[in-house]
Image 1: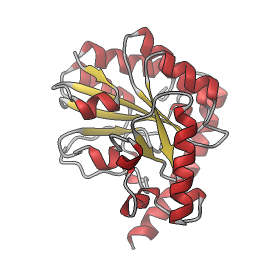
Image 2: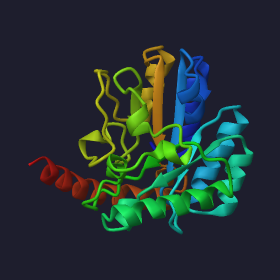
Image 3: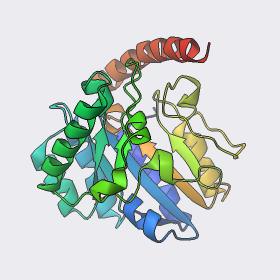
Image 4: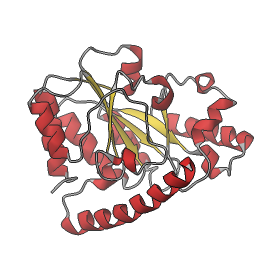
Length: 253
């Protein structure tokens, strides 16, 4: 079975064995290592799933970055503090143009308010857009008018990573080739390398066939060892993928 915590442990072990350095996004922006991985986590739902990932990483002396949304299903102050205390980076998963119906002034005020609230819980130096695929608003458009560096932010993955040189892998769509059904989690890549399952990535790692620099994006709510919850997530994600594919086709027409 794919997308289980057990399978995640296997993936992490294969990457560690391959000799990668694991950096937070803040560290990578400031001082990228030659053979490094950024483990990015979008905490969209079920924050305790993200805490489990953070604990597994800490057990293996690995660090990642966790982006929290300013909504009840993501924002759990105990979890945020625990993940930060484990040595991981905390970031803000902003969606201000979606929540503010495209109003730029309301959106930047919402961004500022939520960022200040998150910084009361943990240091925050990077941000990452939440896709909100069923919204007509792309929150990255906020930065066509404003500048996130004015808020002491050092990086945003969709603006500050050269994905032509950094290999990007995301479990969007509960699959590793989810760019086919993704509305906004898409990058311009020069790598002619594709995976569908986690096992395929593990095999590539063991055979030393992965690129030198990689950014992974995980949505930990998708990873579960409980067969009932696992099956529910599989069915729900299949429905979401069909809907997202429709929105992507409409967007590109």
